[in-house]
Length: 173
Image 1: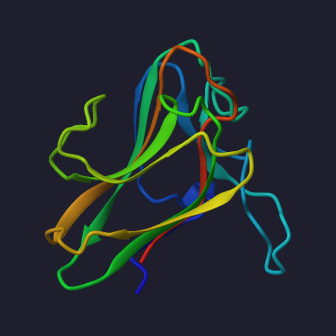
Image 2: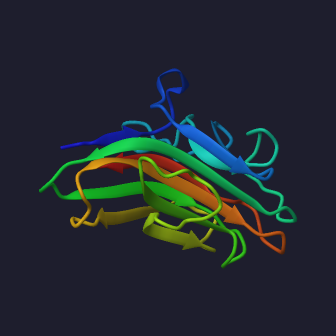
């Protein structure tokens, strides 16, 4: 039972996503970085979702400028169904303040720098410059309904190391 899947490779057929940015480091979908593999498991050309400070040309950020950037889409949660989220990611950042967070947010709630009312599925910090897999169960206590699935990049204006967050091969099932 697959609820949602996005590999970001078909730019003409991307699911409806919404961008919300505060600052110059913004989410982009493109070929600057990706974890796309062919049928035999070898890396091949493709796209991913990533933070960029140069219009998507590279997966890099300005660590001297404070930024919050949200990338969101809608998913439907039904009663009595087990859901999990998984995706590939990589980032370095600064180990604390420069991070990638994943949330479920009530449909009516506005995306700002405040995360009050957001349901956290995880925060990833200071990992490494290689692709890793994130997997998490979505709380079964969640009420049925439509939610915003939100990826948030936050960075302060002090320190930090490239690359910032990149995401590929997203699944909610």
